[in-house]
Length: 119
Image (tube, rainbow, N blue to C red; front, side, top):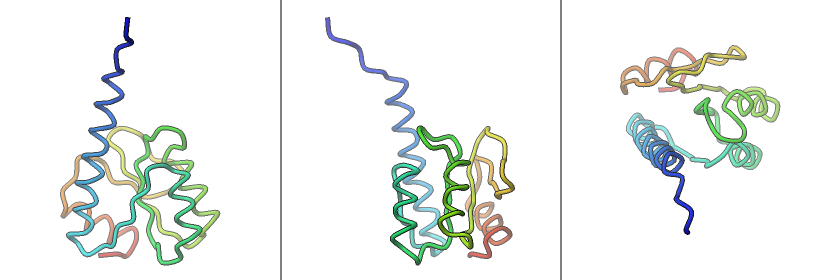
């Protein structure tokens, strides 16, 4: 008997991938250059190798290293780094700015201007 695939995990991954593509397009539409990472550890590696990254935008609810831990570790690597966290249900921690999903492009621009000075 063949094991059944874990459909909830697959659907969740597809949903997150679709959101990531959508969110990247939103950022590009407002003039941002987007560098995507598939995990918190990859994001930290990119920050260490690329001094041009000035803003880290992270989902809070991620497998492995969550967005709270990523934000903390990233600011140890790059103290001047601006952080914006995204969540639909998690609560804010560590004093980092957050935008709640769902949000519009106008909401994103407003929050980025207020919290990071970008846009």
